[in-house]
Length: 186
Length: 102
Image (cartoon, rainbow over all chains, first blue to last red; front, side, top):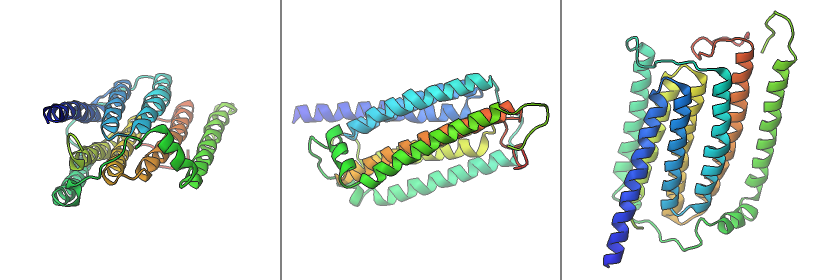
């Protein structure tokens, strides 16, 4: 009993740290004026999300999150930001424009909507979560699901990635062959 | 389940989605818009994984992995477009990219 309650407190503590790091870094991504710092804050956001995934016993998704997002995608982001050059933009200076006010109102309305729905449902079905076995979320569990129930989704994902790779190559090669001063159509 | 219940995770997911929406709506640099879009996708992913844990059903995790693959593809194409725009000396400002004439 004592061990269980100590474990519970520990999980709560880890959850608190990860959740507040996650929310703080998300706010930092939106509010930093330098996109390089925004990308660095997003790496922190993805890392703390991986901790939350681990608490939800999704080990494979947490590993994929760190490898794919925080590794590959963010390195690409940082390369492109370094290539494009530093362009600082201060989103909060110069007085609030009608666009900023509308954006804040729309995002706030969406947030209130989500919180109200969760609050209405929190006491009912959401309070009783099922117990999971030790195999839940392990690579073999995910692999079995991918190769049996979700084989079509797995194959379509590979086609989507192939098409994206071809699209990236075409976008890069097309703008390199352009010569002269006239600005061609994009 | 030890620790916080599913509603807490869903609240974090909703907050992430809201912050991402705010970033997409108010930022003008397309790079930061893409970063905010990643935050929105991650909020949706967190909700999917919380429900997968809640219902003891692995389909949510499969869906989250598919969302990750689609996000990676979207970043490839989006960053390719940004690099192409930069090569043509088009200003990187989504308020000024308002015509498809190039």
